[in-house]
Length: 266
Ligand code: FPP
Image 1 (spheres, rainbow, N blue to C red):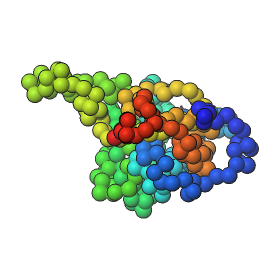
Image 2: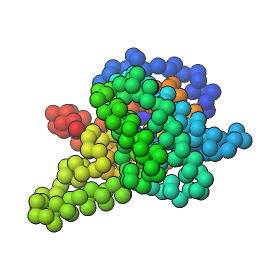
Image 3: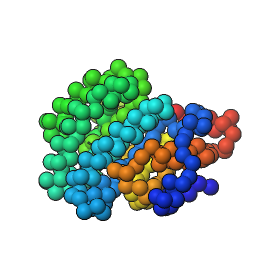
């Protein structure tokens, strides 16, 4: 069995063989979701302000996105700013929003070169005008790209998403368009912020064993991988370790291994 957490020291990890190109493509997770945690700890451990961790964290997004695109993954969903993050000090929120705006402008060439389509989920109307405008522009600019879907979760909460889906369904019930008994798992899935394939792998950095209100509905059957590495230090070899771990997992979705008995999910 593959361990849930990778608690080896960086030295141990560095002696292991890395790489992923020997793993057959169909063994890679089409949709990877990531909880990017540990920016503050990374910075404070080096005597730097927390904001340096966020800055370095933005560079990590570029590295990880580029590799996921190279590997031909379909979707990478990143928890960039949660509903709960609005509770942080005003100065940190302002810094993160400025960083997000800058990121959305600066990353355009990388997104273009790598055929990456940018999308976003969350209560996007909560975002200040600056980042919101650049978000809309980058989404528009990259919408024709056929490669990786880089989905940023912004002002996002898993419970809020389920509430918002229920409200949409309730409106249709009120208008007489939908019968309450017609509501099923598929109709809830279809009314989430971005209907589509559920994450196959959920990776969390900085060692915490929590899902922190991320994609609560969608991760029902995701494989979990928690690394002790903080987000600013997550690199391609560590990403490969997570993908390798995923490739060894047997996914049964509560059924049996034989796909004839339980056909693969979306
Ligand atoms: C958690 O670190 C990280 C976040 C608040 C969200 C992720 C943000 C980034 C990667 C910054 C750049 C993002 C964009 C989209 C430009 P933390 O501060 O909670 O770390 P800690 O738990 O060690 O304090």
